[in-house]
Length: 552
Image 1: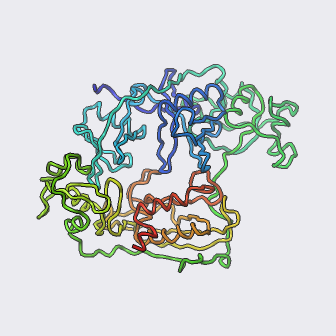
Image 2 (image 1 turned 30 degrees about the vertical axis):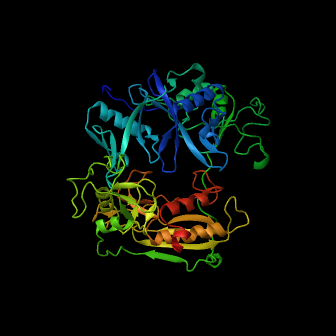
Image 3 (image 1 turned 120 degrees about the vertical axis):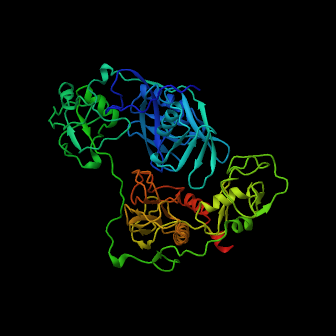
């Protein structure tokens, strides 16, 4: 592949259009639980664009073009993806990319997952990798994007800087993406500048917006911007077609109680009505209900079947370091005649020496020795497992890098803090007859220890105390007991880079999801969510925390 030039994400104005009147490729993306924008496939992007052209405030059934997305629907009016079987909603956005960028050239950079399938990087990472590749850089450090990986172009591999594990890297052609013409159509001329991808929050106001003055109100040399809307009183007899009753007045100016008022058009409907000179009611997007109503101390009760109301963790007591070789040999069986296949840690063949030969030296561990993990049966070079263990928490446990099976008791690197839990007399959505378990995590700022990324350096702790919620039923109490165990093993939090803010050396969640939204599920971190308790039990099991493991 030749390596000419580079490209990237085009800056967009309020309508989601780049400033220049040329065609750009359009990529639709959804926001995952780690606050990363993930691209839909080219087929899905074409499908969304086709529906958008027909009905800009309609719904897109993703299962019509991708069988794996059968439960999902996109509501173009609210710009959210809705999962029908769980009720989970996630924001979506419509982005334009330069034709010279990786998506513009139809190039997708991917990494090989544990199942042997290829997983696409986020678009910003794809563009960064493509730019480095075209500039003929031998390697690329992704830490500036919040990932502890190094990309090596000569071996086409991705390496985890902490575990030293390598995965295969692929650069594959993709189906052509849809193109979006950035030249504004005449009927878009008076559109209210509200982004298709980034929701604009503004004060609720019923406004009369004739098409003429709006350009002066919103237009500007730096792109379209939201101006300060003028509140006017339109003729009360004018009604928008298809919407009964008066459309505007004051806030509730029609005199009807809120539950009986006529429906207010929003989203693309409101934009089109505004362009036609019809009255529009602009409403604020609903806010998540993060906390319950105030609770008096007398109403706070212990959780039945769970002793105590608080657990504290202190600084890790450094025990005499266990010999990595002894730990590895405890869980492995020597293989005399290994198969001719890859060691998925160093990506060298098992019949040859470990890729760590010359890098790591351990007495008694020859680079060609191969072992099989006792429970799952996966095979690796002994030296590779010693290297992986030495780069980890060194707590006497070992985790299979292929199937994630845990040998021994896994502990984490959570900083010192306090976990409180109790009952409050309020119900969660979806659990109307059940009280709620409230968990409060509190971790102060401090200094990183030897097990952390930057020993001796200060770490921050944003957003504490953090409040989380569970239903007070049998499964909810089971989750609480296991979360307490995970807390005591220092597995709930870790120190790393925030996916939300990009801040490094800060306390972040550690792959065990919590519900932090009490009375709604607008962010995907609340209720109702029928599968959450089962999902978090599976996440706890993946960390080696389960009732079965406790009894073993």
